[in-house]
Image (cartoon, rainbow, N blue to C red):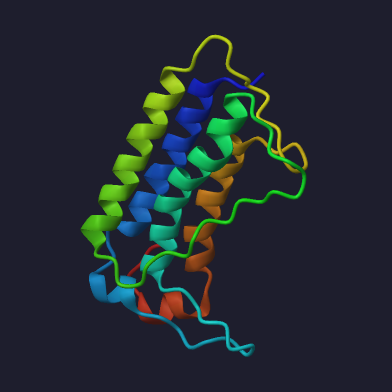
Length: 158
């Protein structure tokens, strides 16, 4: 059985690491983009990666977790793909959304009705709240492993 407070604690640990990686970055560093890849797909800036994480928690909580918690199972084949993040978002706006989205998630999990569905199953049995923590942990770590991270951000810690 999933314990929402344990999940909140884990999400808090992951978020602290995410914010630690965001904090030293300047606006220029957040806005810089590497060249498109060989297939012509445009790479995201670090700011877009961080904004993606901030808006994904909101989107996935409302589009996946809330319906599952309320016992609403989407039909087979439904997948949830949030819109891409906006380019050039100011650092304070990104920080605002990280704080705001987590406040709403915390309130939601701390005030669950007694009859809530804590199984949270969809598409392969993944549990959204546990999966989101791994998703958030992956992106900043992956960004630090991109070739341009060390070149453009030589003072960023790994």
